[in-house]
Image 1: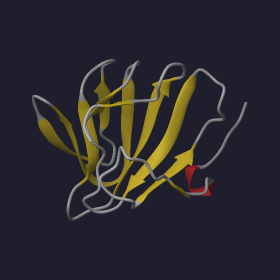
Image 2 (image 1 turned 180 degrees about the vertical axis):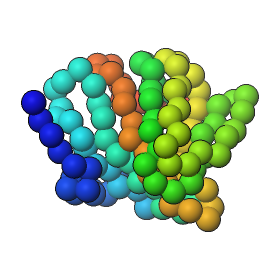
Image 3 (image 1 turned 90 degrees about the vertical axis):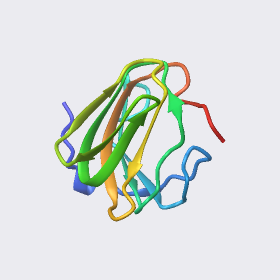
Length: 120
């Protein structure tokens, strides 16, 4: 068994062409090599990721601030405590509102690509 507290996991800069800005940090919550990827991603005000999809379902659990989750069909504002499920292969994006930072835990299965970016 392993027990960690999220506040004890250091925030590391997470630069990627997937994001619309560079104010993004990541906090890995489980070691690599297991069955799942799980980390906290923190977005600066107005920063989001671009349309992408995953080869497995993706679960987001909002941990701080106010954000937006979107598919091609809808866009929703989410806050602390909201849980979002993007089914495998669903084109989507998520990130911070213009007036708020935003953090969420993401969970995906390991194997394959972590994400497939669908816009530049």
